[in-house]
Length: 283
Image (tube, rainbow, N blue to C red; front, top):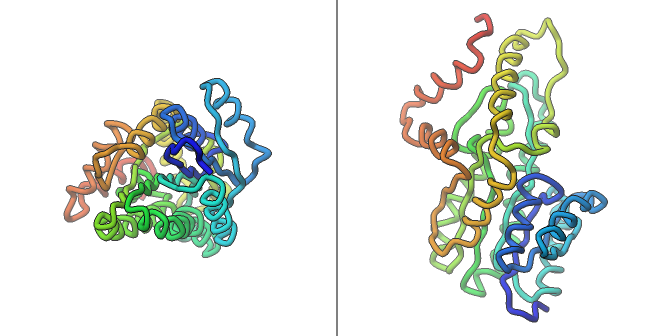
């Protein structure tokens, strides 16, 4: 049991990047942190960062696409710590490809990791939070959850879906004292980019020139990306804030980019901006 009565946070996807730094930052703020990852043999970077910060984290294995494992994980946290106050749905996976290049299995994979995984975990923690009359569910989405981007069809589709789910849920759970929110990073320097699936290069591909232009633009964006540590501070701020907002961002740039879409009632502004990313390709 949590003998100190500290709030308990469960964070997914903590082997690197934003998840790692979020787990450490929440622990620095006095929360008991259960940090999960698919493969705990990759936990050294997290435990080293926690040691350097002078905190401890409870590392546990969890693949968010394994819903029975997710149930066992939540049950284990409640059994061992006696409470669960904060869920940070951080685990995610990217994919770079447009519709014709995507198999249905690849689309399903994006939905499993970026949509169904967070939804399933949220469903598991809600009964406890509702009974306690308090709690926070914060899902790390992306500016791609508000702005559809070229060659991110499956990724943005899954992020749009999880934002719609959480926004619909948020107003219901407010009546039960539970805050449901999303936070939208823009480009963040992390291993996420290296883990993105992308189609094999084929000069005969009718989309090859557009994809090359998009990747060149993305390389520039990530060269000046927000650090994972800075993004994690924004995530921890949102997860521990007494103020309830549904939508947060991790930087001013992310706020401006998301705002462009939310105010774009006919969609022309977003398409004008994102079309310029692939304009160097012949039409």
